[in-house]
Length: 351
Length: 173
Image (cartoon, rainbow over all chains, first blue to last red):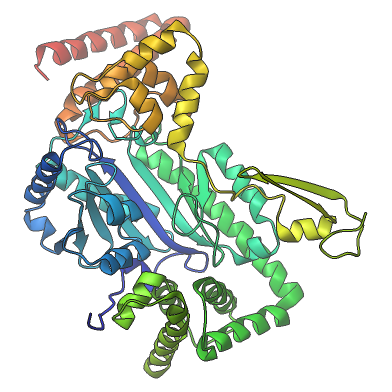
């Protein structure tokens, strides 16, 4: 395997509102084709039909910036890289039959085929841009619908494999960086209040994953009854409140422990630059420390773009993809600082 | 008893865990317990939603004759039985909703707090769904006007409703 080129997704580019606390905003809608069983129950033949139908529906001019990647043709590492960039789900990478993804060139839009539902249309944008992400997803949903008969019931809305997605089929989420709320242990109080407003919090890679690198994903739980706009408004306004709490907690830290926070950020940057072995959890924590220092104006030499990029390149699959070969756990811990250093040095030269 | 972690403070928190049948006990002081976040259940591994459905469904029907009848419900299209659905938590096709409707509606209410879609409508069903939603809204408004004895306004709404109903049924949409 040759050393491979790594492309930045739109969400990593480091431009967008509220970047100090919101890494990215994501919206996805679940859709199914009328008259065909859902992927897990369908025959290989039926799944192939689904894929063909979607390929035909996406044959329009509006999709000229998109490319198809089937799960069959991708190497396992390439699939995992897409997962680590949040462009496809682990389920699609691992288990889908006749699974495929239609990816826009800027990697802001991905259409997954034969995931849990026939179609999952996703838009992921940098910073707090839920409405913008919804507008994109909505637009491609309309375009695809022109060539596909969606399964829809006027009472229950879009019909999906799992009743938790009935109605709008909409899952909207924000990836938040909340170091101050976590450091001051205020986070649990906030997270447990979320369920009361129909929201849920998870770790970086979705359901059942832990909080690492102070990153928390907040998403809507309810999809039926509310309109898309209501769901997004609810998530947006709660997100703004969380941002405010985080900013207050940061300000308090800054007032009381300025020197310690700055020291922590500089030490983290030092370790990222000079350490020889590093596991991904440590790297995530260090990136978070540097990010906090940068957002508080205590540290220079980085920006949001490079910090976002680091978040992805330190992950196991992307790391191996960049190295151009499969690596054991220890080999990855050796490779990780090299890749981090390379990025940080490139950044220094370009600055 | 002193805290088993720091050995300094008085242990005030007793933690007993049973994981896969293995019981472990810990006596900690408040501070150490907080640091270990032993008392934080927020990010314990989440059990899957799909298993939850089974529980939700079975709870409401346990032991009843109805449960047996419901388990035999089957989707005529994909062949999925209701018993299978309550185990895997996923429907087999878009017609399962129709086949299991009576059992699904209470479930949807428990998950979403609602059983009525209020969002986007595919273009092809737009005109009829929009009309129906408009009708519902008008009927509600008419009831309100009647209650507040604004009969003139209510009559105007009634005529509007009739017109829309004709459009809906006669217009072939």
